[in-house]
Length: 228
Image: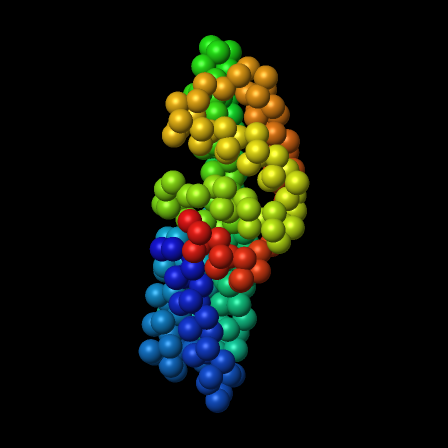
């Protein structure tokens, strides 16, 4: 199950547990609530198998067959821990996804290097521009399913609102996007010198953004999405 959906279910179950007027009562005396908790733990066990031992022990304690049945309050404490586990998993999943996007961008950089060595400078710029687009999607939270974003518009907004590292974004637009657009729409053949500068601009931008989180206001996000 999607981790966002799972978090919503956890919160709903917690609300039900906290809503009880008798938190010290055994959960076995609340069969509907008990079923919700057991179902939640079963889903968690499938969705986050790394923590299956905890979920299985919790399930046994919540179950009526377990000798020492949990109270509603004790069950709520256990589910709060489940929520904490989920938060950690979401952070890890986000970092893994970011790494994948950077790997994809860096793969495009490798392809750009291959094209450069073959003196195919047009292909070099195509790969550089794709790498730039992937990184913008990642850092500006643009869904990867949206293809062909207007890279220039996105960068213009980042520069306008001085979103760091806006100077490096400006260099990327000047050294990569503008030339890539000329290659695509005007059959422009880039020179070796400007190709070297394009590669350098992209390398520096990746280095700046690797461990940086870009914080965008709702206004900037809205303008970016409208300009895609």
